[in-house]
View (cartoon, rainbow, N blue to C red):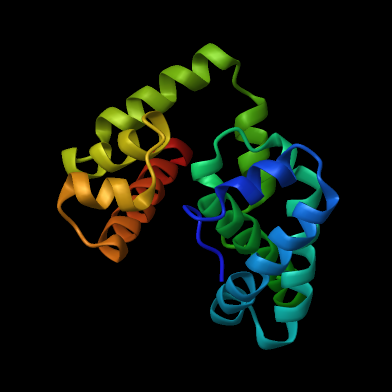
Length: 172
């Protein structure tokens, strides 16, 4: 099972191009990726989502800037795969990726920074704090939970909700 604190050297070795470390990393992550996919994908899409997510990790691991963000990054990859496969199967897209891409493409960096700052300011204080701890101070979920005096699941839930609210603010 993947443990980000004890397997940080493995992650670093894989990020720097060691193929054996990458294989061990993917093997360590596979059970968690599968468990997540089983909860969030259609049953017929689980195996495909796991395979595609791990393939994406192997291709893009070098672009991961902060090792502490690996778990969240991995979850986002599996989420995208589950959504993508679900859209194909059900011909339904609640997130409309094309609209999101058009929105991002229509903004220069300064405008995007300004809108992100406004979205962050619009969050209630307890949501703003969790986003700042994770995305700006680059703390792990466990460190955030200790700072906020919350459980790890409560911290994850608060971070998820904060990011949802920011997305709604930005895209509305």
